[in-house]
Amino acid sequence: MSKAIQKVTAFIMRENNGVKELLVFKHPTAGIQIPAGTVEESEDIETAVKREVYEETGLQFVEIENYLGCFKNELEDNQRIMAETTQVYIEPNLDAIPYKRKLPKGLTVRYHSTQEDFTHISYIEYEYDQFYEPICIEANITGWVPNENISAQKKRHFFQLTTQEETADAWELKSDQGHIFKLYWTPLSPKPNIISPQDRWLDFVYERI
Image (cartoon, rainbow, N blue to C red; front, side, top):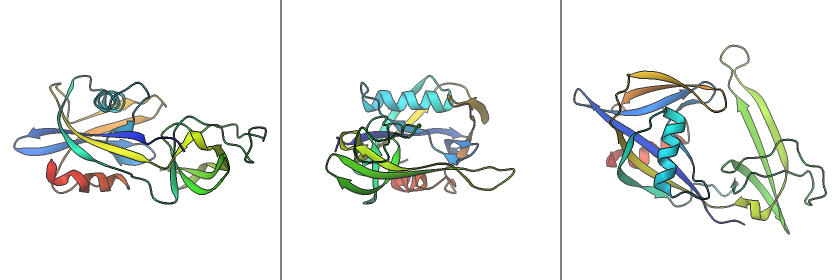
């Protein structure tokens, strides 16, 4: 198995009329989130968190105020994380028929078993449709990936950041996948209602921010 995959999470803060606020965004299909992502091969974690902030908020000028700690391994026993963008095969050999869709680096999948040089995994992607069916399955992949392309370790780093940029209380940003992110500042108290498992992140750093 590959080495630990590094993840970063950005708690972007401001004080507004004496109230501490956190920047979050509403994904059109996946709920309210905190900016986060995967560290690329050539990056350090500080560079990665600033890049993720820009990609998911549009903010170019942010400063890291504090390193808030990390989860040494965020994965459960029945989970693995893709260490590389990877083809998935229907049988445990490279000559088997592959799925058309590859699984991207940084994606968490369900772990089933290991057989010599391959790991048996599955991944179900849900699409949350607000107008028709409440939940439908976008992708359901079960197959085998080479052991070197998957990891049992996902380390997540947490940062507190600020920005000197003037922002509105709410704005929109088009993501690289075409989704419209709706960003807004929300008070830290009461605790913001964000998606699982990200709500655990907020619990972990709440006293630190």
